[in-house]
Length: 154
Image 1 (cartoon, rainbow, N blue to C red):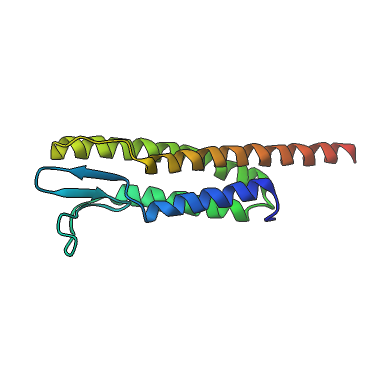
Image 2: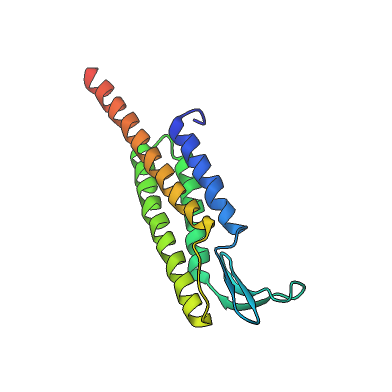
C-alpha cells in the first residue's frame, strides 16, 4: 500500500540509505596523500587515474546492504504488520550501530594515518533514516492498534 504514510517513510529511508553506496563517508588528507572512505574500502585517491585500495571494509559494506534489504523488506510486509514493526525496530538499531561504526572507523583511520578527521555531512543520512524507520514503526503500531480495536467491536 504505497499511499500509507509509513510506506512513504520507508521508501524515503530506502532512498537515503541507498545513497550511501555512492557517497564518501570520510576524507583524510596527509602531506603526501589523499584518502577516501567509501562503503567498502579506504582508497588512496592521490592519483585520480589510478586509485589504490588500502583497506577493504567488508563489515561496513555488509551493514549498509543489510539496512537496505531490511528497508525493502519492511515496505513489502504491509500485510503482516507485527513482523513489519519488528523489521523496522531492528533496522533502527542497525542504523544507529552503523553511525557508531562509521564514527569509530573515521577516528581509527585518522589515528592510523596521523590526520585529523572532520565530521562529514554524510553521517546524518543514517540518522535521518533511523528517525524515518522509528516514525514508520509508530505509524504501523497505530494501524495495528486500530485493527485490534475494530476486531473487539465485532
